[in-house]
Image 1: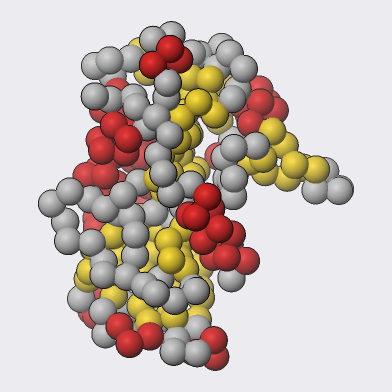
Image 2 (image 1 turned 30 degrees about the horizontal axis):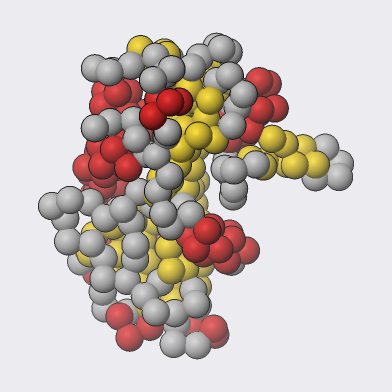
Length: 248
């Protein structure tokens, strides 16, 4: 639940998009894309009381959602920028706060700066900008509970209504000084009715897709969920890139 609480705090702090300033944008030609938002899937139940809450996670690295995200952003940006392929250590870019720290290191949990992580965990160096995607959080309805990243959520008086979500935010980091020069939270997907209790890329799904955990999901359910997440990502990327100022 710690990640959920942190996600809600970040939601309040980062609700408004901050597009890249024009003077910075004019100097961007070469771009690299990093995604570290899609290797864990959550099953979140929000009860009428705290005793009814339930939260499970499962690894879904094999679903390739981060690679899919990189491909979608690359395709969207390639007409305007020279998008260069990157090699990077995905775990190093998992972040609860993209403004300064993006991870922890060493026996005393020393926070690492964006500058350190890009310098040590991404190649090539020296691009004009790096577009970094991490999971984001959303409040669950009017409760003080929330969800984060990719997963399924249900709960409370809405327990018969289930939302599939792919919540993320994008930060644009300068390759010159490794400062965050633009950021945006992905919003509801155009053309898709969003889940009634989540903010961000989400949609309501039928109860046939709900499970108590990944082990209880059939292969067919998993394929439907994976396809649904890819659809949310593909449809939300263009508007998110416009919000962060990289596209008109």
